[in-house]
Amino acid sequence: MLKKVKITNVHTGKSSEALVETDTDEKALIGAGVATNETTAISTITGVDEKLHRLTSPKPGTDDSAAFFSGLGRCLERNISLTKSLLLQTNRVKSAVYKGMIAEVVHAISVGEKFSDAISKYPKLFPDDMLSLIIAGEEAGQLARVCKRIAVSQKKSSKVIKKLKGGLIYPAVVIVLGVVVVIVMSFTLVPAMAKLFTAFKSDLPLGTKILIALSDLFIHKPYLAILPFVGLYFFFSNWGKISSLRPVQDLFLKLPAIGVLVRKSAAATGFRTLSMLTESNVRLSNALDITAQASWHYHYKELFVRLREHIGVGRTLHEAFLMEAHWLGPDARNLCGLIELASETGSGTEMLAEIADDYEEELDNLAATLDKMIEPLTMLILGIMVGFLIYAIYGPMFSLGDVILKKK
Image (tube, rainbow, N blue to C red):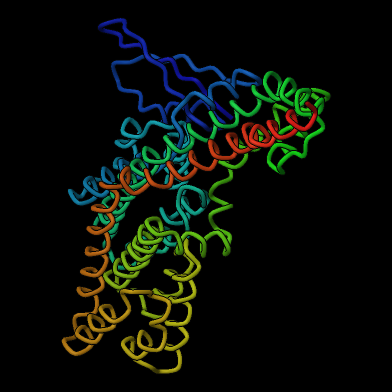
């Protein structure tokens, strides 16, 4: 349920609005972060208006997550109570979901629930790896430290995601424009071209036949012209599910420029999670299990699962890495050497953090040059689309002269 809180400053008379996703007006006031010098008016948004507000209002994401944990960690570090620390974050987050979550968590804590139990009700905002870190921080009395580490990780993730989205805008625009051009041609140019080629009864290339068949389909059933855009919408909106499929992830690793970025990203996520868990005194076998769940690429998920199995039968972490090095790609020898160094010096946690730092630094450098990396892929897509249209339209032209001369 979406609540709109209109907040008015009693001194200046200026008003602002805050959206909070919650079920009661009392929680809406908590989530809106109302100050003592402000008055409020609360209304419930329903129906079409609610859908429009959800579409246009800020979405929950890594920016809100980073702001939430950064502020929470800073407050807890200064011995501010957990409830007060949470209340201080209401104006740092922007999405209605996060504001509502804070209100719900504050309410849950007020009736005696633990912080980790309260946030476990929001698996989309706090996935298993993050929740495990929070639980470990609570048990070790290091919740402030864990929150700050999560904030740093989320900020880095947010930075990379923004660069990825920015780099993918150009290919997306090219694909959409290509679809528009093909549809427009199917209603205008292709029918006239089909009449000309049919009149001369010449053999048509496969590309031309496909284009003519597509044009006939759109002319007789115009509503089908919307289907490509619907398909693109579902493709981009379900990209998370598509990218989690094993064949797609294998394809990513084989792409020349994208493969390096994917491998570095998955490795950085895995080793940072493992580093934070071991730093929070979580047992190594449990830490590997949680890291496997948190890994988004199945290569690294499988790696950490097998490492846990080796640790379970008494092998050292270095021996486990040597046996499963094939999952690590080109970095295998270097990583195994670092793990061996850690086992000899007794600095496992520090070495895991160093590995994660190195991967994140390399990932930042790759993300900075993302535009140059994606540009060849964009040109390839554009070249294929333009080449197909030229082949389909002008291919028959080369044989048309022979047909005309024969008739003369």
